[in-house]
Length: 339
Image (cartoon, rainbow, N blue to C red):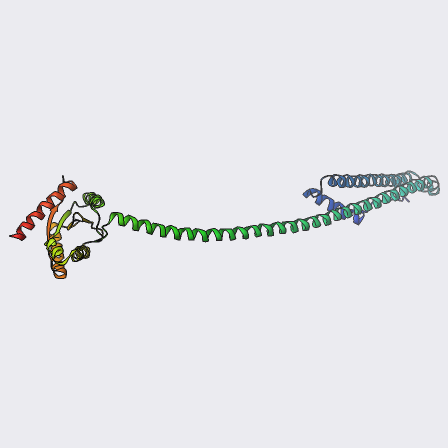
C-alpha cells in the first residue's frame, strides 16, 4: 500500500506587522515625514521589510525541503514491492526526520525574525506618533503666535481708524473755514464788481457780462435786446429832496427792474442815473412791454418816470455798436417826452 504524504505550507503573517506595513505604505505614499527624520524612519522600515523578506525566503526554503522529503518518500514507497514496507520505512524515515527538524528550526528562526520586525515597526509607529504630537504642539504654538499677530494688526488698524477720524474732523473744519473764506472772497469780489448803492454791475465788469450774453444769444436763436434806461428829472429830485431821496430812487429802480426781468439778465450802472440792461431770447416788443411796466411801477413808488431806448441785435453787431444804437433810441425817447 502506497502512502502519499502532502506537505501544505502556510505562511502566517504577524498581525501587528501587517497593520504597520499598511500604515507605512500609506504614509510613504502621501509623503508625510520631517526632513532627516523621514529618511531615518524609511531606512528603519526598509530594514524591517528586508528582514521579513529574508524570513519569508527561509520559510519557503524549509517548506520546499519538507515537500521534497515527502515526495521522495512517496516515490520510494511506490517503487518498492508491497511485501517490503518495513524495509522502506527503515531506510527512509531517519533522513526525513532530520530534514524536518532542520525545517522546524528554520521556521522558528523565521518567526523570531518576524517578531523582531514587528517590534521594530511598533517602535517606528511610536516615533511617528511622537512626531505627530510634536507637530500638533508646534501648530498650536503657531496658532497662538498668529492670534497675537492678528490682535496686533487689529490694534494698529484701530489706531489708524482713530487717526483717520481725527483727520476727517480736521478736514471738516478746514472745509468750513474754506467755505467762510470763499464767502468773504465772493463778498469782496461782489463789492468790487457791484455798485454799493444799487447792487448793479459796475460799468467795467458789466460790459464783460453783456458781451458774454451776446455770445450766448448768437449760439442760440440770435435774439438779444439792449435797453438803455435813464431816470427822468433825477436832478430835480436831488435838488428838491436831497441826495438821500435820489439814492432811494436809484435803488428802487434797480429793484423794480430785477422784479420784472430774469435773474441772469445783467443790469449795469452805466453812469450816474443811467443803466444798461441786456435781455436775451425775447422779442423787442416783449422787452418794450416789460419796461413800460417798470416805468409805471417806479412812477407809482417814487413819483418819477424813466426813458428807455431799445436796440435789437443784428448779425454784424458788436456790443459797442448795439449800445450806441440803444443810446440813440434813448435820446429820441427823451425828446418825445420833453415835447
